[in-house]
Length: 263
Ligand SMILES: Nc1ncnc2c1ncn2[C@@H]1O[C@H](COP(=O)(O)OP(=O)(O)OP(=O)(O)O)[C@@H](O)[C@H]1O
Ligand SMILES: [Mg+2]
Image (cartoon, rainbow, N blue to C red):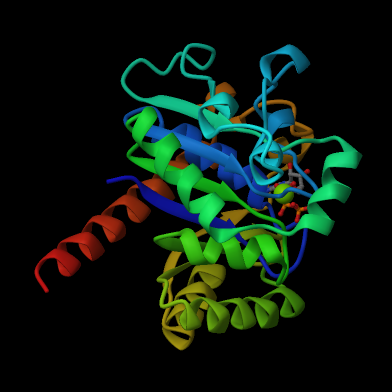
């Protein structure tokens, strides 16, 4: 069965889209991975994945507007990224302002998103679907939380972000969804081992799982979201950290599935 992982944060600009693309690409070196851009009012993944206009036939926004079928939205990126053992399949959001405004008026149906996940997962035989979301508590947040198996909460080690992350953990609890805490953009003035300790302590406090602490990497920001960083820089420190986080996530999710099936 396809495992659905939503990536979220309370505050904006914490690195959700960057981590979604890099985690998905890392997983896709050995698994079949779908990526959905559910940041319907501020999509960005199509930029990182380097999609050209003609490559997008339909979007998730079209599905919510009742104007496309899930299969029509899938863009197979496996060849482009040379993923021989796994696969990467992307469902983009529309970047047309009129679609965003129409969606704001029409709202989002949980049943439509569940059906989309099911159909895309089945058609592409996916092991995972990773969903990138809009920050804060919005319609799409609730939608992603309701439909996912696990939620990765991305936070900076900043008091505003961390307080907001506690709010998101509480919301996830009401949906009975397990959460993973990822600290991102740890500034050069904070030692990484101190950030890891903060992350682990908070995970205990929040009844969450600590996933990883990623340093602020100048080469990541200098990439200007022009590509999937780990694919272009497989030997970088960031790629190593993303691989460790992916291994951790896979291990924890497998443990949770084993626990559920033994109940
Ligand atoms: N570990 C990191 N080190 C340096 N720069 C990073 C890191 N992670 C992300 N960035 C940069 O931070 C910026 C914001 O990242 P991104 O767009 O992924 O955030 P976001 O949470 O998706 O934002 P939004 O809430 O607007 O959707 C980008 O320029 C990205 O390259
Ligand atoms: Mg984003």
